[in-house]
Image (cartoon, rainbow over the protein chains, first blue to last red):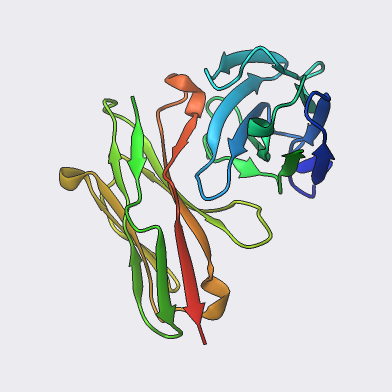
Length: 117
Length: 117
């Protein structure tokens, strides 16, 4: 297993366009998280999944943002009608589930950097 | 609400110096976890350590050591004999238990460490 994979690594788009990011977690991890990191700041929680169920969403996740994990494996994060304020690094992480040793240790991917012009 | 404060935004040291990165946290939980992550220039967050709130023993791992003091809500990180490869942004983070917000991590703003040769 090569860790958490994210695609694309970089995306430049014009304001108003839709973008989608994909995350492939570590295969045995059933929890998947999305975070956003702006320049010079720490990552901020957006949402997380337990298998295919989306269990929590941050207030940061506006109606233009939607995340899915249809089969409990990979996940997508879509941003509709992008705005310049959406420019950030979008980080995906995964972890083991309940009861597992190290269940709350998140393994992060390298991130998808979004630039909205 | 949980909060993590890393008051030092940037630290510059010369190679072989010791350096301590400060972390202060706030939480109402009685059981919680504290973490340190390293983010090198490549961007991927790398897990360094997790500490349970019931375990106040200090920990040493090679040149790294951590000092957890519940009385002052601090979890400081010391690098002994720093090396240029230690140059990175270091994040302190806090999470509740599995049943409390699903192990969502709250990050501090990060401390950028620059180690000069």
